Image 1: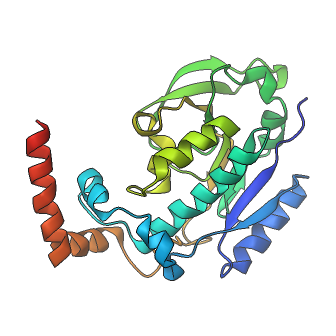
Image 2 (image 1 turned 90 degrees about the vertical axis):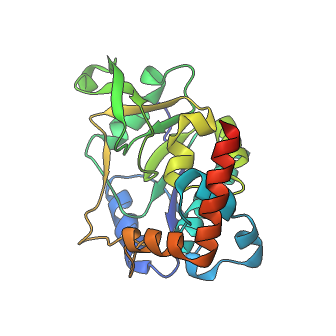
Length: 248
């Protein structure tokens, strides 16, 4: 079995309850870990705000990013910087994840199933359709398959990243113009080879147990409509139409 990789858990300092929950969960599984302070969207510094491109965001999404989405993206970028500086793969988690009982076994045997060209392995994947399933070669994990994906892989909740791939993620992430999930999961943007384990070995906790830190006190649909109908939003929409017309 391979040595367990370093584990980094992204957590807002104002969410000590989640920090405690994740520490207990990982300790119970015998997984060493450390916490990385998340960037709080409510306290973005001027420099962090400068690294957000409203124009590019409207071109891509036809809306603004919520400050909490910007903070989340910065948090993952900081984790990628740390992973890029490491000499081995790093396991990055958010603080609302639940690991399945076979999680540790799958990760410890990764050298037996990791594709040679892997960049990212999303262990809590969502939305994208798993394709090209290949049975896991580990005898007691034959009910698992290694897969690639059709479409943009949702969720940046729990994933293994190669140090060289982490460098590429940092490069393509700035200026920020999309949520962290899309930066990590859209191969057309990051040009990485993204794999997963099917069925997945980690899931996010439900909204009652862990309400969204992104949309706390807000709704995505309402925020989107507000950002699109604002003065700046209307100007951005006009610019986006002109931009797309000239690209045709």
